[in-house]
Amino acid sequence: MIMRQGQQLLLPANPLFIWGSLLLALLLNMLQNMGLWGRAAWSPDLLAVVLVFWTVHQPLRVSIGAAFFFGLLMDVHQGGLLGQHAMAYTVLSFFAITIHRRLLWFSVPSQAAQVFPLFLAAHGVELVLRMLGGGTFPGIAMVLSPVIEALLWPVASILLLAPQRRAPNPDANRPL
Image (cartoon, rainbow, N blue to C red; front, side, top):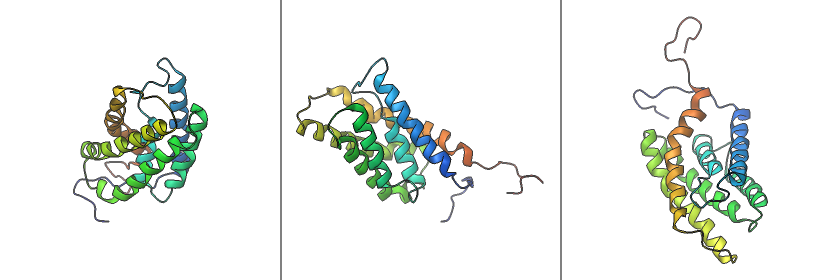
């Protein structure tokens, strides 16, 4: 793939870092659900943000199967309808894989604007499945969650790509 002017060359992603960041996001989601605000409708799904990030940047390592697995773990943790998060994360991962090549050509703020519909669709799938399963409507505050997740995209890009960044000024010890 041809790189854009000024784009930094990245080191290969460490698989341990990828899966460790996914497990950390899962744990943060679990802590967030048990925290002060509980399962507030507006709270962002950190696992969804990290899943989309790695699905876009490493689609061969993190794919739809991983999204389904982490979705089942979230369903078991929340004790809700089994398959609700799994289906939402699977749809999210599918659409992220669909746009991953195009998405990487844009700047990070533009990427955030383009992943917003993905997060909105995932929350829509989750809401429809919850309502079909006899759940209650969480309220209009649910619309804030995909907005917050899209705003977290630049933060995730900075934090999750940090270990892959090469030194900006090569010298005798860092030739690339």
